[in-house]
Length: 191
Image (cartoon, rainbow, N blue to C red; front, side):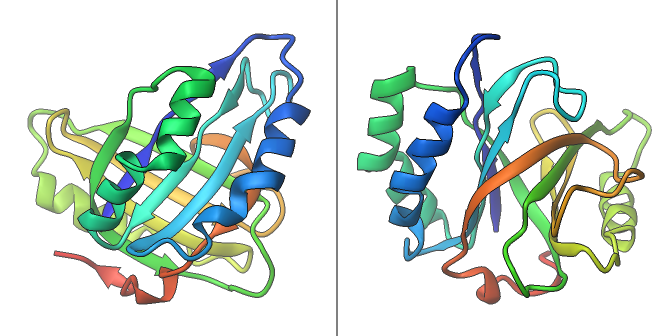
């Protein structure tokens, strides 16, 4: 499994309904994309949930690298790059997934990245993060991943409704969820 995200920060006065319409018109195009566990079409709005920016920031869990490559080199990413400029794409190695309640679509998300100290054992930090995946009634899906070039740990969660107040990380709204192979991402540790 691979996690991936790019962020497109927009002007402070940008009409976020433009992004909402884009997702409403095109979000379904990845609903059957091979190798895709999930794509959460995420936005942040300036002044909402403490966000200082307007941002379109989709998050992906890829079941296969072929699926990820097919997207990055395909027409969808080309179209996005033509409209907004080519964004830097962050990616992490997937360490584990927790499945929550799947009834209904998630509407909130949180994403937290934590730099692992030089003294930390990465395997122990990942095990601890996996053990701490939320077991919350509002949880849809959660994942842990690692960027070994930065030794950075990522925790991502999708929520039914707004994220709980005690959920750490940056808060997002979920406009759409494409999840063609989410059920094929095994629960628990991926290594």
